[in-house]
Amino acid sequence: MVALLGETIHANFDNVLKRVAAAADEVGRDADEIKLIVVTKGHSVEVARAAVQAGAKCLGENYLQEALPKMDALSDAEVEWHMIGHVQSRKARAVVENFAWMHSLDRLKLARRCDQFAAQIDERFPVLLECNVSGEASKHGWPVWDEGLWSNFAEQLAPLFDFDHLKVRGLMTMPPFEPDPENARPYFQKLSRLRDFLADRFPQADWGELSMGMSNDYEVAIQEGATIIRVGTAIVGARTYGRI
Image (cartoon, rainbow, N blue to C red; front, side, top):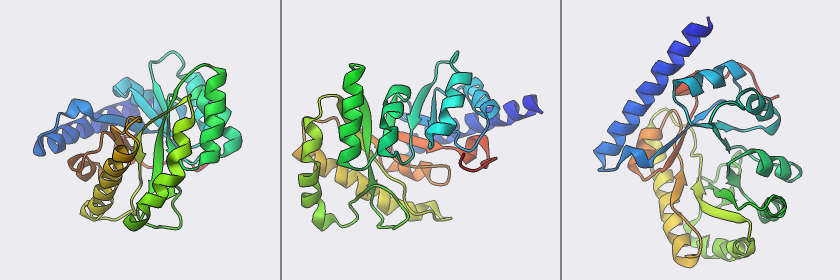
C-alpha cells in the first residue's frame, strides 16, 4: 500500500512538472522560475514523505497544529515549509519559528507580532500579502477587489515597511473556485496589476513573487505571471482528513 501510494504521488508530481513546463513555454517563460509548493494539509506524514521522495522541495500547510508533527517526522529531509493558511495572531511566534515563508499576511496586527518574534531570533521573515481580489466573504485577505480604492489600501500598508524584521516578497490570492480554469484568469490578472501598483509606491520592497494557482488553475496562473503555485489534489489526491 505504501509503495503504491509513493508510485502514484511520484507519477502525479512528474505530470504536474511537465504541465508547468508546457504552460511556461507557451508564454515564453522559464519553468525554473516557478516554485511548486505541494500542499499536504489534511494528509498524513506518510503522504508528505512520499511527496518529498518524489522530488518536492517545498510543502505547504494551513494549520500549525497539523504541520508541526509532520515537520518533526521529516526533520531529516531538506524541506522548505510554507504557511499558506490564515494565521491567528496568537500563533505568530510558532509560525515565524517553524516556517520558511508565510503567504497569508492579511493585517497589520499580525505583521507587528511576526516582526517582534522574527527580531527575537534575528531573522528577516519572508511574507506575502494575502489579497482578496474577488470580494468573496468567505475569503481572508486584504479587501482589494475594488481597484478604485487601491490608493487607500496603499496608505493602510505604509506602516508595514517600518518593520525591520519582515521581508515583503509579493502577493498571494485564491480566486473563487470554478470548474473552468479560464474563469480564474481575471483574478490573476488583477493580482498582477495590484503588484505593479504597489511596486510603484513602495519600491523599497521586493514585489517579485505572485503566489497564485492551485490544482485546478495553475496553468492559467503561470500564463498570468505566477512565480509560486500551490498544488495539492493534483499531486497527493483529495484530503484524507479534515482540520485537526
